Length: 159
Image (tube, rainbow, N blue to C red):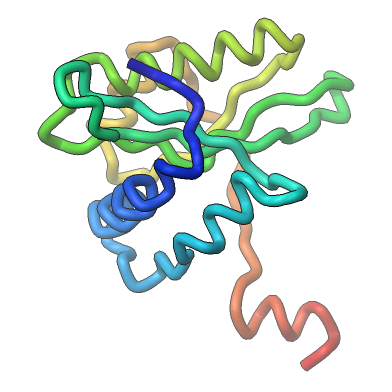
């Protein structure tokens, strides 16, 4: 079952985020707290949205998608940027990942958004194969850049 996340899901989502970070070999970078997630998803000015996949038998949260709106100046409309998609390894193969992506695609179509985009690590071939089987195509002509930590502070001119 796929449903919008609720505040009660924050502890489970936080745990799954840490599992994803460990899988991506970057656990030390996963610094978000449950309080920060609650504020980002359910605070007075939500910055992101979340859907969860639950086990049909137990109702336990076994996967999640966190996403936010982006905007295409070329298309003139919003789209969805999928920040995280994760399903516990023990629940994979049950259609939960596909169901989460299907729900986000449905939201895009329903609201007139024209893009659903995300990033995937180059070495994550199981995810790449899964996404390509759904019809997603890599945007190889683009390279993601990021400023963080000291570089971000330096670029801000406030160091």
